[in-house]
Length: 396
Ligand code: TGC
Ligand code: FAD
Image 1 (cartoon, rainbow, N blue to C red):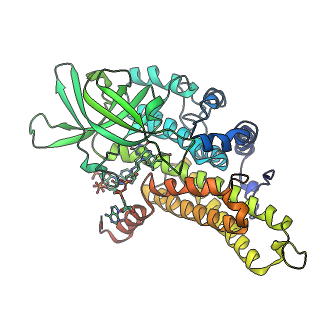
Image 2: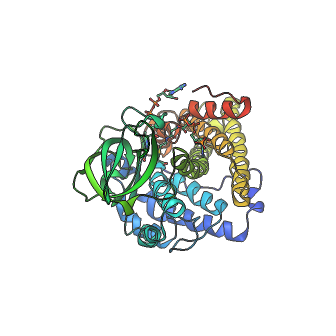
Image 3: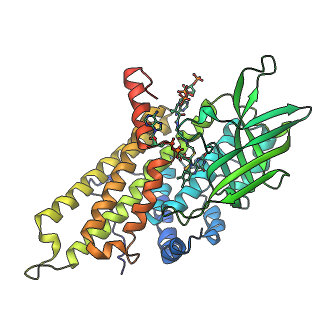
């Protein structure tokens, strides 16, 4: 049994959204209710990415939604956040797919690409005709991507790429991979710099394999990539990339979206727990919602969701004003994902035995959020980023 979602707006924040923002949210909410929720439990059980939804999300303008031109919807950052919230209310896996396509593939092409790269790739990525992935993490370098061993060696008019990437969302079904690699400094080969490359996935020497056995994000494709003497023309270098700062700029975009997405997952869990607690009766034929301990949990959830909503909305407004720092985004990602995971755990508890089944979305959200806590900078890495910001001392 699942419940029809009731909006979670304890603080009447809907009054702070513009009509356009509410319209965008309505569109994304209806999309999720009509298209994702009816199939998501089966997808999760089968470990299947719902690829059939890709074109419709393109028509709705979800990919690269906050970019301007090239077939993108040109939404504000708050509107983009609301799309992420609604998608993750459905499932973190679908939000993750859209995050990667938008923030980690289209954003770097838009920000660091040549005009030719932008006009070739952005329209087909915006429509969903082509899919992209982002290869930063390696088997030996997760939290510390600066240690990467993937290299790009210049040879005449080409670069030759070698290396391995791991945990890459959408990898096996992508048409293009944004690959981050170290390029030797031509004047001093002992020095190298991280740069980004567009690698079409049908190039000789490129291969991708699916990661199996996940208990989390089962409706999302997660892959390993191998690059063995992959030749690409120099025109595939993203010319604006220069150092680790470039991929980290992409992560800011994705982390911002995740801060909203986590609210969506938490809203789904809280709403389910609230409706369940009002129906489920134990002791003296009373609903469990009448017990103080249950009420305390529900109050914790709605308090934390409300604070998270304020946080993401504020960071979104800063981002729209061009004044959001990466530390603000770290704060929002870290807080909101933690909040969502705690909310999912409490909601699971309130549902009792029913909470462990896929009759309800709660345990699926909980398992997904374990990945969301780890990717895009772990909870603890964001603590260290914030610690460095406030003390001036890096503790990595
Ligand atoms: P560090 O020396 O501190 O920084 C290198 C340069 O980058 C600058 N910088 C940033 N710039 C923009 N945005 C940020 N967030 C930035 N953070 C740092 C920094 O000022 C410096 O600039 P410059 O001009 O001096 O060169 O670099 P470090 O090697 O010490 O590492 C810092 C650390 C730990 C914060 C960073 O490496 C990190 O964030 N690690 C976490 C890795 C991570 O998040 N990986 C995500 C992979 S993608 C993914 O997970 C997709 S999941 C699917 C989905 O999104 O749904
Ligand atoms: P590690 O870095 O090995 O960390 C393990 C533990 O050690 C963590 O608890 C961490 O907080 C802690 N730790 C590490 N360093 C320190 C320190 N200095 N001080 C204190 N504690 C520390 N990457 C991509 O590039 N593209 C993708 O599309 C992508 N998609 C992903 C999808 C999924 C489902 C998952 C799970 C991951 C994905 N990732 C992707 C990779 C993700 O970004 C990494 O998993 C993440 O950055 C953490 O790296 P790690 O798993 O190697 O953990």
